[in-house]
Image (tube, rainbow over all chains, first blue to last red; front, side, top):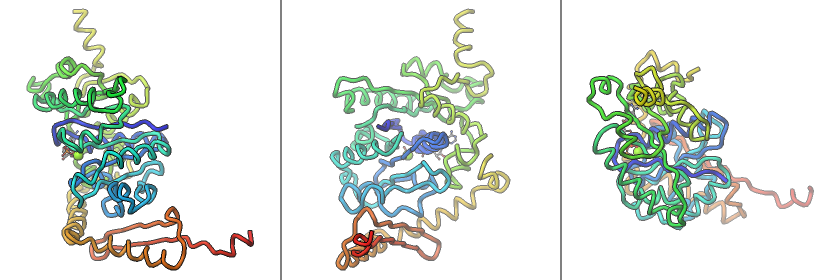
Length: 271
Length: 86
Ligand SMILES: Nc1ncnc2c1ncn2[C@@H]1O[C@H](COP(=O)(O)OP(=O)(O)OP(=O)(O)O)[C@@H](O)[C@H]1O
Ligand SMILES: [Mg+2]
């Protein structure tokens, strides 16, 4: 059975869609079967970031309403055999995504894929709660900035109360993905520190993605950054994050600093 | 290593512009009535009237281009005799 991951944040524009595409491609590059699912009804963008926008025929609402079978709505990536996209509807209203429909689709996807990565819309409304509903694991995307951290805290609360896992009394596994991390601003002391964010949110760190032009370039050409330029700094950070998702232990390095995060924390404690 | 190595030298913005132009032209045109969706449904309905098609054996693909959209519908039509022959 596949693992369902929700990529969520509360706040808009922090990098959920970018991260969904990058992590999805990174896992598929390890030959795992991956589907990325866009839950942003009416404002879909995952198709664009994945470079599949010209090929969408059916979307998730078509499948829910019985206009198409699930396999017909899955768009295979042109570069990676094991990577698929399920698009959100651009034309229907948000209510066309029904809880029963979503449950059926996720249930089916779990049979065929190793990873089902759900790109949540911003906010805390229906779309966001539906995207997290069936998750086994959550990636909380946060920028090192006060309002993003506050919204992430809110979302963490929802992950612990409004998901199926939570309702069944199980523990939802949550991981923090710190994105748009600017090493220069960090050095000047104008940005929340990694430790500060970790202290406040107290969930384990999945990775730190640097602020980078490479992300913009990748979205311009329609490729996840891990595919567009696998050796760029953000791509390498996403590859590491994907390995951690898959259960490997990979030391975390703060962009712009030579010592690892652990080294830094221990160094400080020792001092 | 990077298959998009090509784009490292040249700027990526022109490609972004072109992709957007094509996409938006289609999205603007299809607000209210999605012609391609209608064609798709009706073509499949006509086929289904004459032969029994297994919904799993229908492939619908699309490629939206600057001036034309290509809608490809691939339907596997089983021959009644083929089963006996086998
Ligand atoms: N590491 C990064 N470096 C530079 N730009 C980035 C980075 N991550 C994301 N961006 C940019 O930030 C913007 C928002 O990213 P994205 O669409 O992934 O966010 P989102 O959380 O999905 O937004 P929404 O809430 O609207 O769905 C995009 O322009 C994207 O290119
Ligand atoms: Mg998004």
